[in-house]
Structure formats: C-alpha cells, structure tokens
Length: 251
Image (tube, rainbow, N blue to C red):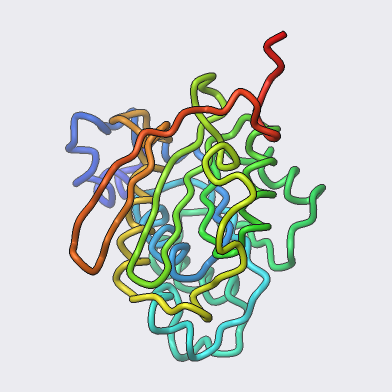
C-alpha cells in the first residue's frame, strides 16, 4: 500500500489516469539498474528517484572531476574527487529518502553484470563505452530484461528501447552490430549539456512507461535528436534473425 505521505508526494502523477494508484504501486515495487552516473545517468537517477521507483541500483566505477559538472547534474562542486556512486547516493537520498539505493562501485565483469541484471526489472544504459553497452545488452538478452538505451555526443542524441520479452524486438546488437566510432567519447568529441539532459529525461520517461505499464515504449524504434536544428526523427528498427546476440536458428 501507499502511505499518506507517498500519496501526497506522488499526487501529481497519480492524478494521471494512465498511472493512478495501481501504476504508482508498480513503481514502488520496481527495481532498476542504472549503468553510468554521468550526463545521461544523472537525470535518469533524479527522475526515477523523484517518481518513486522503489529500488535503484547505481553502477559506476569512476570518480568525479571538474569537467563532469558541465552536464552531470546529479553531482556538485562539493563532490569533486568522490566516487560518482557515493556522490549520486547523497543527492538521491536528500531528494527522496523512501527510495532504496544499492551501490555498485567497481566495474562489473561478466558474472557480476549478469547477476546485477538478473536482480532487477529493467536496465538503463547510460554509458559512453561501446564495450560496456554490448555487455549490458547481452546480459539483458540472457535475463530477458528490458533495456532503455540512450546516447549523446556533440550535438546528436539517440534513444531506443530493447525488450527481449517481445519476440519482435531487436536488441542493441541488431541495430549497431560491432559499432561505429566505438571508442569515441564526450571527452574526445565534446557534447552540449542540455542534450544529455534531454536524452536522459526521455530514458527516464521510457522506464516509467515500462514499469508502470502505460503508453507506447520505443521498442523497434530509434529516436534521433538533432540539437543543432532542434529536429527529431524516428527510424523503424527490425530484429535481425541472424543476430549474434539475440538471433535464433529458424531451421
């Protein structure tokens, strides 16, 4: 059940007929893994905590430096030099002490990543490392857990949802294969802060839709954002039956 305090705290989204008390209860009972607490993971973590997702697993192995503060809004100047997980936990606890926070401070290997993914209901990929993205995708496919994937670099953003519970859904590897610009990061190419905020906010929205059970998630669709011209495009993405990660032999 929701307490009187929870009913008041979440009243504005409970008023939505698409959410209501039932949807808010689903959020309270949900467990989510956020991989990366940088530019994308910052708004994701803040909005999911504010919305009342019951348990947030926070994964990042990095520490905070001054160049991060231009876009990584869950952190602040007082946290410079701290582990990003610890910095984010302090901010999220202050925002909503009712949310349970589970830290993952070290890099996740194949076994620990598999266990972390299996222990939650949904995963958000908020990293800028192609190798980590591939590993997270493979773990989500194996555990049949939905993956909300976002990316932003320079003045371009992308967003999609991969849901292995849906037989028609592609996975990350179906779309990107072995990648392009695989190791190009924001530190090398640059990025504008509000763009990662926009992509991360949309990732949080997709997660809430999946967890609370409303709306039409971006499964089988890739949203492309051109921040330079403020234009949005959408591409259809089909599952690859020969995908090395999610493909199945059809005989």
